[in-house]
Length: 564
Image (cartoon, rainbow, N blue to C red; front, side, top):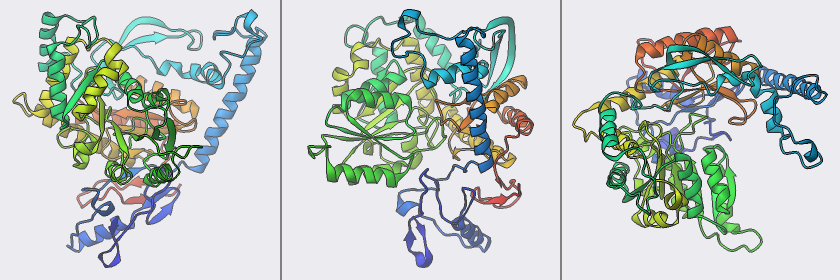
């Protein structure tokens, strides 16, 4: 809520996609009247404290999802329509052996069976994905730091196969790795500590934790993770994806209800499906949608029997890796407490990358970790390692040690990897006697705000929260997915482009991941090339360009209308 006339509070209406819809609405963008009033008050020398959502938020929560311009949406559909028509034509030519068939097909004696390879996803792979396949799976041959070296490759059969030329593309600016705090490097204290442990323990453990694969290093790591998160206990796993997919089935089952955000990661979706629990989806970051499902669950209970649900588990992420949005955690916790549900928080992208001390979205909002029942995260991003963790009450962790498939059947974390995590986490916590960790967190926050603001000034449509280091730049049209990736690589900038099925079919995008390792010079170079390619491919779709920062007070919620 925000203070209304007379000092009262009113709730800001929210659109279905989570965008605030108060003030003037034009072409899907909102001009905030509250922000304008605040700016006027500041100009008059009057400063008032603005309470967010009835006191749930201690600072402004700014996210933007500008609506797709109508012409762009129509042209995107037309583009996919043309590609689909040509795809069917090429399938016809392949069927009659006029064009060589490279894709997997059923054997002749199985052609009367139900098709194994002929679903739509395979059609998409054959006729659309293969056209731009050269933008993915590029092999790098260096540390995934601020710059990387990429092995050059060529294709002579329209991307069905590749051959390496033997050349190395040196010093490519890396805008795609999840190296948020810059710990993915081959020099420094982390590398030295990992090398020392490698000499002492070797590489592999060759056993599970329950047998003879439980090292003192694993115990040290779990105590450190629990201390870092502010919870009673924690458990580490060898794979981040399996941390979700194998632990959710251990927590819920038949007779339980899972309420899942519609944009949750595939690992959460798989874990929910494997659990056997009933799954219901709420609109992304939309608290009205979540509350309605909670109310219905309480009132109606299970289908047919109307018995109460055994458990209700809410699944959310800290930062959504394709949208760049941050979960509205204060509101989720308020609803969880109100309706006596459990909360499972996936902090894969937010741990280390958000909050004044790098402790994730809980730290970012200044909340109590005890309000989150299951805290999950990965070591693959901010810590420059691999694996994942679950944190929470001691009873929860003791239960998972004996019931989680990842704990019982999976091989333990490699000792050098454990040491990489321990050393980087101690650095973030300041236990190494330096301020390097704090400086990296601050540098990442500065890089994020600077990069997002500059892209908006250029006129691109940028999704997500202003504090999210995941920055989606909307491309929309299928032909521009490949063109953007290729043109950026020509300019020595490596980017990740994303399309269906990772995103809705008409919401293709480029996704930038900021890092504390990026200097201002590196970001300015990347921005210059992005601006140039944006003009070349006509990607500047936004109709609400940010007013450039001048020597005056600036509010990022105010925009200048631009005519088409």
